[in-house]
Length: 318
Ligand SMILES: [Fe+2]
Image (cartoon, rainbow, N blue to C red; front, side, top):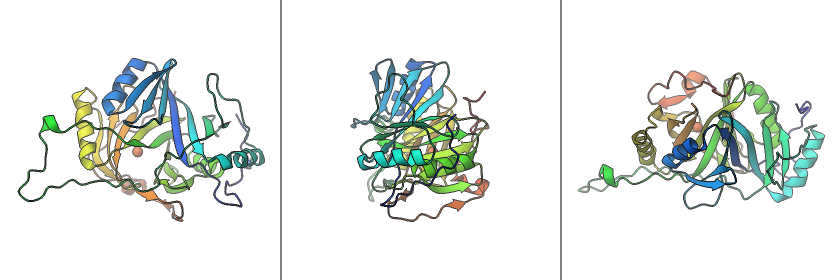
């Protein structure tokens, strides 16, 4: 494993040195056809590419996810987006921090830098257009004027198309080390935490309350990917459409405390989740957000049903 001792904070002398987006996540599944069905049903656009799948959102060319075939569902790597002028600065920063730069995995072309985090997870930093939002995505509560019926008929309710990826929640064996590594190596900011159980990190060039988060487990893994939808109506509608297609297990409708988003999680065929998310808090570039350390029980969700008993099980461990 790469030696990471003695890493320096990523704050540069001439401004923020930090990733601006979680550009792409990549994972393996044992059955690409099932992955295709699940993500299409969820409202994402899937595209066959090489021997795998790409995940996009309707009306955009941005590839948010890449799925390849493997023995079990498992995280392959993360790709963070950086500004072109920060590429050389990051190379120097990694060198000074004793984070070894490695070759890209076979089959991946890259204009960027590849490293491993403290648990061995592959991470790429690549020059990319900022895909994290530059302003808050407002959740819309649709209402109707007096004398007009507000709800559509069920058959006319429409299809839910998430507009973009919001964040990813990963399992880790050590939340404290994850905070230290991802803030110092990649310049992410700590948004909030609940002791050493869970931590939420934002991009310091402006992003949702969290673009990546870590929750305690025995090993690395994916807990969920999260996708922004523009209204609470869309959160509920997405959940219903997924149930109609056989994906009825999950958790929601509810509202989180940390991040404030309305949510519904849908369980995928491998025990991790895809989340419909609406109206998450936003941390602007110039705001010095004060990270809180919260009581987990009081900060998990404001309201909603009880989560499933196995909600926090890491199916990639062991
Ligand atoms: Fe989430």
